[in-house]
Picture 1 (cartoon, helix red, strand yellow):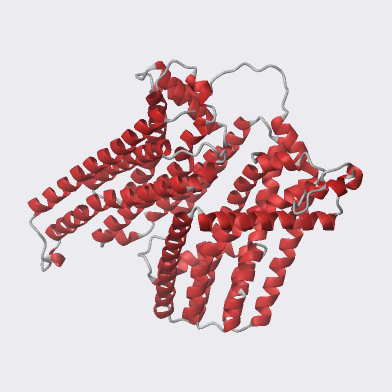
Picture 2: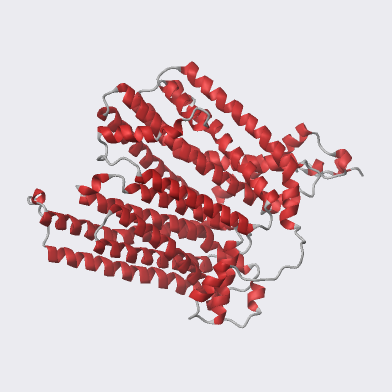
Length: 600
């Protein structure tokens, strides 16, 4: 019986199973993959509407609140610029600089995010392992995963870019076709950074397999170079007061590097601004330029994928070089020295988790990117001289920075720490042969998560406070709050991960996207909000009272006695410590009980 006759109806790739002579044509192959993609989308939608309603509702509500908040912020900002800058040419330059800087930053983030997403999809997905064994063209497999990355990247780009663009359209009273062209502009823009990230991912996987040290050194050098360049940029930056005429002129001159005419962000900004002014023909011209370059980039990316994807896959998974001596890296050696006071079992578990983290580029690259961006932002704070006059604003900005660091850490604990127990269950038979208690495994995860997060988070918060010039007492409160946040978030992630495991799923991202991961993210967010409020409100009134004592400008303000403010501040710190202890101990206790009863 021929393969075509025996193919099961309804399976998109059923006709592709057979000898090379019966391989599908490119058009039929494209149709088969589109049927596959539509079926996967329908199954995912059905599963979310039937089994994941809580998570879907939570995502919609939180995303809507985030979008509304960003829209209100941009609407207020553009209205402020509209009323504050009376000169039309200066206003146009300012809006263009804002657009160019925003989309340049978004372009850089899309390059890194698309490279990371594609690496996980092309080299770590079981679906790709199956597809590579079928008589399907390598270009089609690569294009299938590349289009998935485009969808994920375009979703984030639309979420971040649409509030700003809609707010500008409302303030500038843009015509109706401006709103119609917003989505095509954003989708065409996504293709260009995504193709750059895809080509970089393929070339690195093809030519640098097994050379993690080279990649690490290159990434570290790039980060240090970026920090050095940003430091020089800040050191020679404007010293004028914030939002003055001199400050505006200086900043506009320094942001000209984002307005190079060969950059895609300039094409996008110019097209949108021309369309908002009513010049729809000029806007369409820039849209056509974006689409043409995006299609060209797609063709180049597909060709590179066809030439390098299979050799890169083989180079990553079929390395059979000479015998190498097994040795611990410097990171594991440092971790072993720092954990010298722990038991031998605990030290081995910590080194194992650290080694898995080091060997997974998806984890440490995201960690470096987001924390590096936060570090650059904190370095930029000091150039604004508002802290000379507004003590309350300094305190508010410092606690907002602390909240951002905590929210970023909650995202990482949900994405990487929460699934660790579920992934450990698939190979628990190995750990079950070792002479150790199950609680030791959970303690190892907790110490790895808490110890690995305190140093970078506390360092970022310290950098923010130093650049803002906060009071020494508030700096100590921030450091203590940061430690409490890291320990509590680690306890919540490990405890809920042991209580709500998913041993059927092998993908950490899908485990984190399930009910348990969503609940962990919600509980972590509420915990961060409670801890920050316990320390932020007393600190704010304490600093305002201190400024009132040093200046006669605030004599008319009705402030409580300083002793009561010190009592409130002390009570808030103690309350945060108690809440942190409860948020750490209770989830761990629940996780210990559940983990003892699990049958593997």
